[in-house]
Image 1 (cartoon, helix red, strand yellow):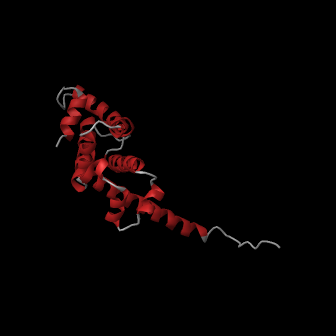
Image 2 (cartoon, helix red, strand yellow):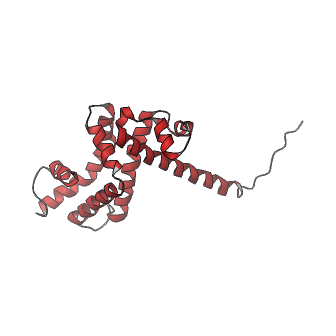
Image 3 (cartoon, one colour):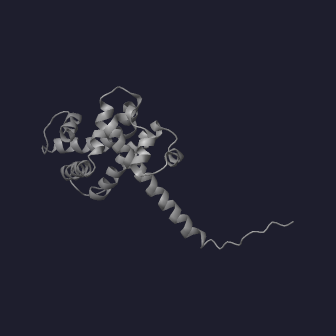
Length: 180
């Protein structure tokens, strides 16, 4: 017996597929934001996928569908937060812009400050990890903070050469800027 196939024009499937993709992106973003809040409040050891699901009113299998385990979820949450900051940096102080190093630094640190004010859980999320020596701390330093610093340090050095910021170790200057 011949199998019946439904003719497809491609037009009907695309909007539906796009809507599903958008919904999936929004779901993942809400999971990651809730994860940051949970990890900020309870630390990695005290947080649970079930508690994150409860924050969202979701069943926890939906979270494990997107993020197999707590470690993967934590890493995705860290990447998500830093990606949001980088996106704002690219809007307010694009790397190819004609902003001076000092103006770029000002925009980038102001963006970081605004993000932390709007999403205070982010700061607590990062501080929780700094309190213990664990593999996540090393991973975030290499995978997330190193690229961040690779963007900021050359600007700090150039602003120092121009006499616009104090001539101290550039990494020390950076941490003075972000210290709460």
